[in-house]
Image (cartoon, rainbow, N blue to C red; front, side, top):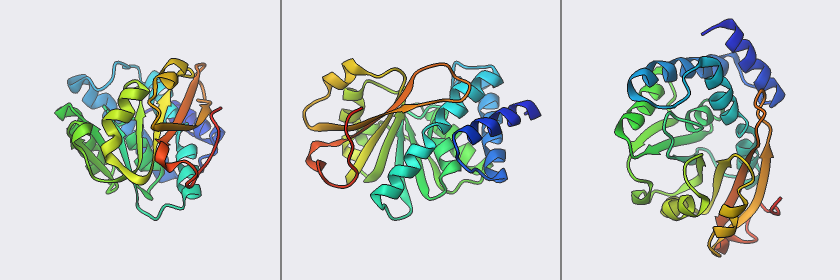
Length: 229
């Protein structure tokens, strides 16, 4: 990978105030190289250009790292925090979370076996014991996770319905979206509480991004609060 790409990655991470180590930057670049290599055979992402991959995948996922860290700190969750990334595909944002948040144990679930296999390969190549690839339908998972995330996976009603069985009693959903998804928010059932819609700024990307934070309504008033923005 070129020095120019590394420079753009470092500059973007600095804007996001992530405080990453040299080893974490090296892993992120190695992940980008793995994604490019495997994408030629397994079609992990429609984005092919390395510079576009850096912006639309790595930096886009990195924009959610600080919000995830904040939630973990505010919720007082004991390590390791268990996160399930649904429909992870090429590992976005799951692999990025695993690299940047070593205290978070990340499982990336996908119904496509080759994509789960890629995550397993990435875990070995990047020496990430906190990263796991899971070949399954999310509806079949019942192990309790503290955070269930997705990025451009499905509508909010479908995402919450399909993954509800994987939530621990205190868990939240972290859904990365583009523009404020007003129609999807309106379609959510009454037993899903949206407690924050958090705007994201992705360095080098002139596009709207946000995180929709949700929890089952029974958890109203327990733990992290916040109003729908």
